[in-house]
Length: 391
Image (cartoon, rainbow, N blue to C red; front, side, top):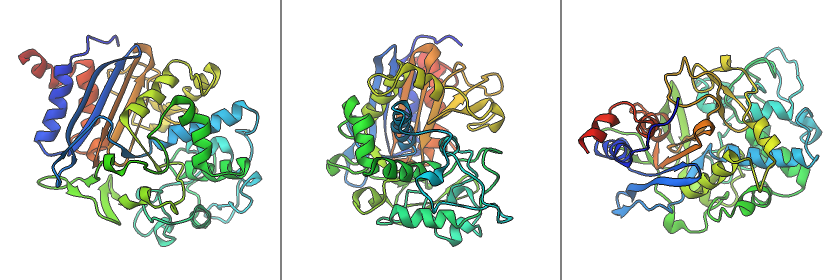
């Protein structure tokens, strides 16, 4: 659909409501139209207990926003002819050979890691008695100091959910990919992403560590009557299971660089990256590569964000808006992060929206659906319309 004029009043009403209802503690929301920031807001608290207000340059643990950044680094290596999407993972990780429940050891390709079609999973998506929990597999959000080698060994010991290529399941595939890239390049994933993505874009605050801890947003988890401070090893309800967090992980240099969840960064850095993607990829990727990444690779039947959503390389792709109820146009790219984040790029409307919060999971997909409220406020839908008219 076409985009109506963007109203800061509607967007601020959505943010203020989430804060007043104590669903989130703090947020930074940036909205860009045609490359110009048309609304920016830092609201709530960076640290509620210390009374520190949120700031626009706050650094957040960005969780799965790591994925598109690592994916971009991988796709640059594909462009350079150094990485083959059809190649088996064992070319670089010969010991990574997870089996199907019947003991068969299938081939897993780089493409399948990138698109979550490898048959791998996440512990937070698995029942409490699953192999993921028995083997103590990290989702890349907990267990500070754990090495990548150890976590990949645990993951390889868990049975695959399905034959690679036969389904879609959100997974630790990007963590495995990180291991591939490290072997391929002979250096750490942090350095690879820095050289291929963040440095060329000037993203000074986005990395697998935090340079200025004074700007690091305190992490919170959903709670009643208000969010609670996230503690080490806290298990936070999500969907029908629990996800384990360790906020100190980002500060422990011995923690492996999780390609799926291990980075920290600012809303401004995320917006800069997404705008580079929206405008064709320069200076990090070619326009042809970006189009490939923005093309659905799995089919809308995968319902990666519900009906009508497929998955490209790095993000969900809106294939058919009709069954979704979303005002976003076909071709919209979207994803989020478990610490409480969401973003989308509506390429048809030249619109990029980044909403980072410090509250899991409300800021990503909570009961109050903060990302949906921000989305609808941007497009002029829902209860924001009333706030706009009264303003």
